[in-house]
Image 1 (tube, rainbow, N blue to C red):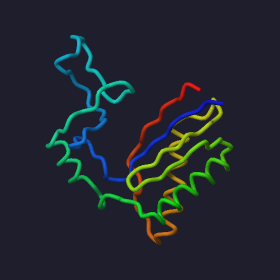
Image 2: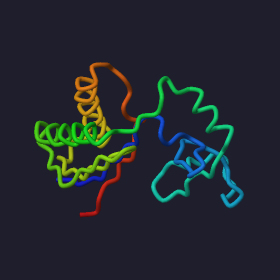
Image 3: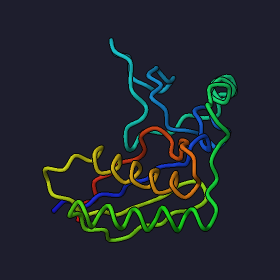
Image 4: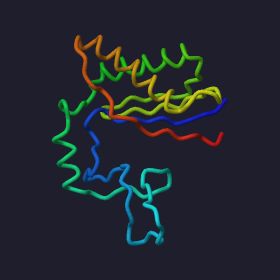
Amino acid sequence: MDFCLLTSTTYGTWLPGDPRGSITSVRDFRPSDQKTSSRIEHDRPGEAWEPMISGLHASAQKLLKQPPVLLTVAQALVAVEQIRETAEFRGWQLLAASVMRNHFHAVVGKPESARLGRVLGDLKAYASRALNARAGRVQDWWAHDGSKRMLPD
């Protein structure tokens, strides 16, 4: 069994260019980068995050389809319970889960054949369905994608 740490922010709460810094798929050269014929991707583990880019942040804010999502305690409890249920249904070992106001973390043991993107996607999709059912409406609850890191042991 492989173990991973999965993280996702809630919708609209940490946008590209954010003043706190951000991890984006910006592919460019930094002054400290070695000269190469290809651009370097800066969204890989171990890479420095991007500093505030006010124009990028303003543009990302304008593209939001709805207000940013900050979970209430009741919504966080719904989400964490659904994460437990989804892991159990899929046969994954949930070692830890924490749902906060603007993000969640889950430490999951999964079969080697289960792709990380699928595991994170399933956790977010089923939590969204449960939150939608409770809210009585459909909305985006989570940011696109998230952090998927394999743990050494």
